[in-house]
Length: 81
Image 1 (spheres, rainbow, N blue to C red):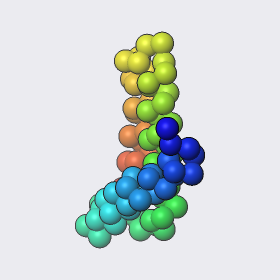
Image 2: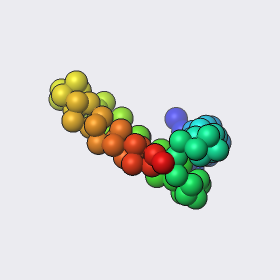
Image 3: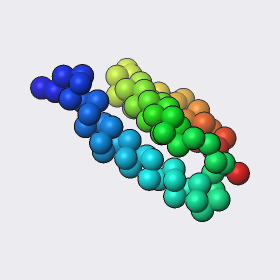
């Protein structure tokens, strides 16, 4: 079992790297407003992780997803140019 430190290291190496690359590409393409990428990647990963946990632990995952998804998508869409 991974402890928090190991989990965080894996997340930073892979999850954060992927999120940073995707955000950089979107900003370079003019699809997203330019903001500091590192904090944005951390914040979006945290939001997506929490959304996933909310859905995974809900009594009714489909209903929870229907409630969570528009909010998460709205957060991401608010970054559009």
